[in-house]
Structure formats: C-alpha cells, structure tokens
Length: 293
Image (cartoon, rainbow, N blue to C red):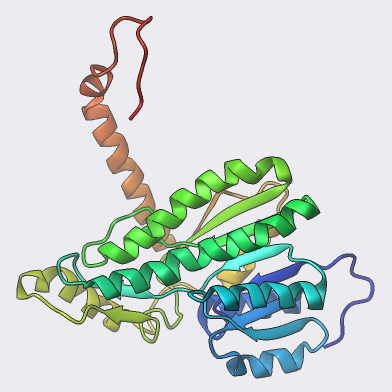
C-alpha cells in the first residue's frame, strides 16, 4: 500500500511485541490509517506479511526488551528510517501465574525484566529524542492487574503496579516538554495472553490449589472465549493518542471497568471507615513540622 501523499506529517510509532495480540492489532490499525510503524518482535520474520503490505510505511526489527543493545538498535533504526519517534508503545510482556510462595527468584527477575524494566529502558532511550522534538506520546500497556491485585498473580501484578506508578510520575515530569503518557488497562481480550504469553511457576504448593491453581485453570478455560476484541482495542488506543486531551488511564473492556470500579469503592470504604484514625496521626500544633515518610 502506498502512502497517502495528501496526509500531513504522519505519526511515527515504535511498537513492541507486534507478532501477535494487541501489538499486532495496533500495528495493523496504525498502518491502515496512514501512519508509519517500526514494528518490533523477538522473531521479526513473523511480521513479514504485515511489512510486505506496507512497504513504504513499515519496518520490522528484532527486539528483545530485556536486551539493552536491542533497544538502542531499534531506536536507532526508527530514527534512520523515519527520522523521529512520535509514539512509543510498550506492549511486550507476558503473564505469570503462581502464588508468591510458589514463584522462584528466576521467575520474578524475568517477569520484571520484561514487563517493567524493558519498558523503562525504552522510555529512557526515547525520552531525549521526544524532548528535543518538544512532543511525543508514551503508551504503556498495563492491565486491570495494574490497579487490582489478583490472588495467584502477585508478581505479575507487582510488575504492572510498578509500571503504573512510574508512568503516573513520569507524566508529571515530562508534561512541560509536550510529552504525554497514557496507561492502557485491558481486561480479558481474545489474544494469546491466556496461551503462549502465559507462564506458570515451576513449583506448585497444594495449599494454594484454590488460589493459583484455580487462577491458572480459569485462564485456560477462558482462552478463546475472552470478551474483548483486540481490533476495537487498537482503535481505542489510536483515539486516545490522537486526542488533544488523552487520558492518563484508558480502561478497556466492561470486565475491566467493573473490577476497577469495585476496587475504587473498596478503597473509599476503607478511607471513610478509618478517617478518624488517619487524621489523628497529624501534629495537633499547626506550627509543628510535618514529616512525610
């Protein structure tokens, strides 16, 4: 497909994890609308059909987000090919099922390396370029599990909670540079997350069978039955990026909305119930120094 010559300044997107799922759906949607994409995957040959269809506006490169050299090479390729990066989408990641007592150190480190530190390194590499441009949008793929803790997924939730906290603070740090940050919080979508992108702790403890064991079975039973449509999610993400006032958090899916609303009500219930204790910890002398820690 040739580029629309009448389109003014197409955005350049760098999207991680494009071989399947959200990354693939988003890359296809972005290219279809006429923007340019550096599509990345650990096995870029899987992107051959996509790249062949958009030869002028798409390029595929190998990117393992746990490897610093891959990250720098991907960013360098984006600049050499398209001259800039307008939108960075940190989508690469995977799920890990296992109670905290079941997962080993290797499980934990690998999960954080991919889901959190991979995104962190990419952001740190791209930020100087966006600051120089005076614009940009960082889209971090979080999860309902970035706001709601689920039993049997403690480490996965930890990576997404970390991504949420970093992103919220980052948004305040880069706002004056014209750079925007959006967290995407999907529920259950019909991607390969429940299959190829889901791992289980090597060790299982019988005592957690009704927690992590049941969680793993739920993911298996739901595979292919998830209510969320990745193509519609891609359009929602594009809409957020194109908005002059994008959301800090974009929740995707009715299931995600319901779970997050329940979490917010739970937090408010605790705040209200313990308000007297909360305020009782302040100094009573208004002139006294208040130490936050």
